[in-house]
Length: 241
Image (tube, rainbow, N blue to C red; front, side):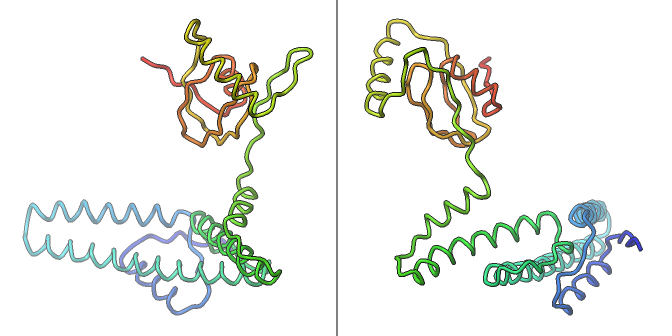
């Protein structure tokens, strides 16, 4: 049986809050709940502005109602937030697969996953290491969790010329320094780029090292390197006016 659409009013918000307070489980909401609440708030704000042009008492009454609505929404959010944190804590401790995600809104599911991942990382980094007779290593555990959720893309690869091999870091640095001196005489075309995804350190076609770059970093790179990054969808070009 399909659930009927709930029209947001002061009374329905109060009823939703009461139900969330009276029951231990997270209560089911419509996927558009936040959008509907926002529309309701905007309507009330517009009504209050209209009332401000008339009776002072009516304007004060409208503003008091908005204040009460905001208090209900805040307490409602606080109740659901607490339930989500407790669910995440239980999930991290027990590794149970019995969590009911169907009552979580999309943003709440994202919040739950982030909190669970953070709790897992600290539990593994501190408790896990202590039980294995090692010092806590939270940073390592956090980095491992981050890699699980957002693995770094492979660095862009450039074809090597016949007989050409990769250099060591020191040789690459020397090549980079030499390239800088040569650039003073003849500057190669470059492109201004904004990185859309993190890109680890990589070696260009002339064995110059670039990176690492984080998302939203801005860098000016040789056109040949830029074309490879653009073709892989890692960057977008910024055209100077």
